Length: 146
Image 1: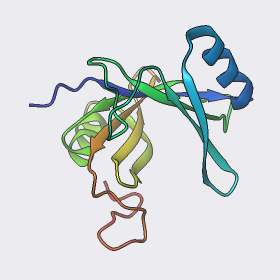
Image 2 (image 1 turned 60 degrees about the vertical axis):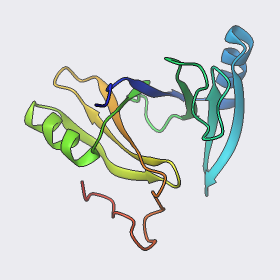
Image 3 (image 1 turned 60 degrees about the horizontal axis):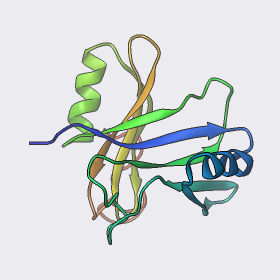
């Protein structure tokens, strides 16, 4: 049975480099900028050491990321571990949530989707799957197909 615990966080920033320095200096987090594509960078944020799968080595701990804010409405997002993105997106919608971003892959790691709860709070769901590939590759799900 899945624990449905929070497994990742993301923090939007107007200046991700400056905010990365803030959290690094404040908490000692190890933060590394990673290019993710044209005009898209992601700052991997390690709050604790990771194992060989890049998962937190400390039980109960989570790591996350910092990214360039796309709009002033963006909020920090916590991702909850689920067995099936499709199942939990449908369940959340049935309970009054709205989908912000349909199922998307993180190649070699899994899939995520972002939603807004009935009170306007953003959250995400995460499904671990080491076979996840970029959209457009054989076997990859297409955007919007949750």
